[in-house]
Amino acid sequence: MQKLREPLRSFVNEVCAILGDTDIPTRQWIRVIRETQSSWRTEGEPRLNFEDALRTAHPTIQALPSFDRVVQIIQGDVDLTASMLVNREKGEPEEEDKQPYWIWWTFLRPFLERYLTQAQGPEFDDEIFDSTFEQVTSELEADEPILRLVSPLSRVQLSDEDIEFEPGLKLRSLSTSEQEKWINSPYFQMLVGGESRSVLLFSSSCIEVAGHSQLVESATLLNEAYKRRERLLLVLRLLTRSPVRTVYTAEEWRTTLSHKMLPPSGIDFPISSSSPLLLIDKVVVVGEAESAQLIDLWHRLRTSPNTSRATLALRQWNRGIMRHSRSDKLIDYWVALESLFSPSDRQEFSFRVPLRVASLIGETPDEREDIFKNLRTSYTLRSRIVHGASPEQEDMRAAVTNTESYLRRVLLNILESNEHFDPQKIERKILRDSAPPLD
Image 1: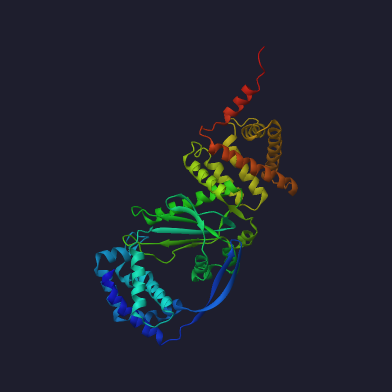
Image 2 (image 1 turned 180 degrees about the horizontal axis):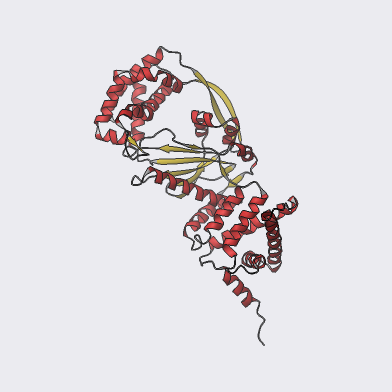
């Protein structure tokens, strides 16, 4: 990087001269002032829009001899080429004719934006340049992840410290500076409306996933990162019995070798029509006790001998808890119960599945009887739905609430067990426990 210092200094100086002769537009920057985790306000603040100014001046800037000089140095240096010109999607250097634009987009423009922000305008200052250069060099040469996903969560509050589940996966607090960065980002403003911007302000926590391996393709690394995020969302939903949602997910990439930061390559937004629902979800508070339970459940999901057996049921639970239609929920929950408890011959299905569930999770004879009766009623409603009927909403509300609760308890019970789950053992245990004593 040091060989770039003086050529880059000349380049920044010339860009400042170009921008100094233009009227730099202003933009309304939204500031976030968070008073508590659930209380915030925003203020508008006019700021110079360096991003638009650089976009407009790009053709003139690219024609500068100093621009060509910086590009030539990067292209002629093995380390800088490996660091700055590797296309993460292809896993190889960018095509030669595209390299100048690639360097502009991934390095020079972000560097200029940072310098101009620190200088508060297009005036060149050697001290500010050196400070910016040292900051950027330190970041590029740091041992940072190649990929980082950050997913703000709607209505989840951390009352304790951040929670690290394993290296590269944590549930942490969200800073107001991050909220401001995203709310004011052109990516965010182009793709969402004011409604979703409001939802982001309700986010005080996020899931962060970091991918470190340089030995796999980018697509594989990205896919694995999203899988880890989804597993953690499942754990959150299962423990809290709440439809925990991501507001969106920002991807931050760094290239290999120097781990250079790239602009966000993708933002995963919720469907806009569901955004109002994000605002009415109940607030989930994760304190010290919940933190310990989350970590324990995360590791059980990975190590339990029953995780594979419960895969379909976990997937259907995850789908059901996020649905809005009670009919869809009930069908999902029964698919899950059927995958766990259905007898192989399917004889007396509507009797034996409720019996097995009640025997597994019921703690008293009265509770087991209630579970058995409620699930029998639930299954009757489920059958009516799949045959085209429309049960009374009050009946559906009770059936969904009960079935959701029982399925959740079943899943937690199975994951917490160190023995392989076998539903047939439940009936054998019933027979043994209920056998009358011999005289």
